[in-house]
Length: 418
Image (cartoon, rainbow, N blue to C red):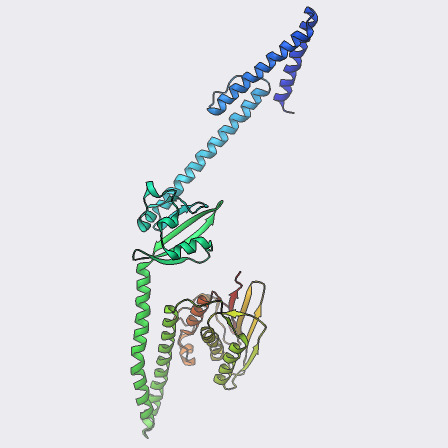
């Protein structure tokens, strides 16, 4: 029981006692007691009216009162102060948020649970031609009338960003759910970067095709010259031929990368015959190895989905690398396994290993840990870049573990898709 309530009970008890004494003195106890209770009731109604008026317009001027009413006013006043302080703080945070989002170079739009626009920044106004007075409260799909966007919005599956053209502008859009049924839409103009990527891919593809013809001609003449009896030119010709073959391999892999980058998205619902695929890769590796290593194949039952030929190239590159960088007589394991999160196709070798600082950059084009050794082994510097590109297209990840001098493990991780 609070002090105010105790005080109010004391007031009521004293008032009733006073009425009883008056009743005893004047001989009308019931009438006087009833009158006293009515007075107390009117006092309570008056205080309640005062409270209602103060709640409609709270201020620091609290009405004078006593008993429990004094405590009620005290608690409500301090609650009002805390709420007012919280509102000021929230208003300040909101103001800072709006200022920061207005300064963002990316288009930002806040949507409610009905996909109606609640707020947008100047970048969104420019990118989607929005009008502040007219478009607030409008459904976003009534303003961006594109089938791919409407479908993307309706599915409510925003794990992957959406790319689409809006009035000759290529847009990359992300939608992030937050709060209670609200969404934060962010988008940016990627027209220029897409054009540059396309130019780069076209250049690599065209240059590679143009280089292939002279390299083929050179190889033919080198073969012809090696058949002559002039021993003095055999060694130089052999070195030239090795470099020509290396150049031809680089061109072939550059073309493969260009095709992967420009290819349409793969159909991930197509199941692959894993046993056939891995046995094919294994047999090719055994043929290439010529019994220099012990290559082991171990297949646990797993399911893979996607493009058979692309995955064959990726796994073949990993197994070829293991052969290339493992000393003769070493053991190479080509195996599969699974856990609760997904399935793995992996290659373990007993090669030279890779220092930790090099691992994050291994999938970069032409990145070499040891330039001299890589060229000696015939590597192009593009194999792991191709592996990464293939895995990216399949929603998979390349995980690398390595200890210098002991070997490496390359895991192709395919996460479960719900």
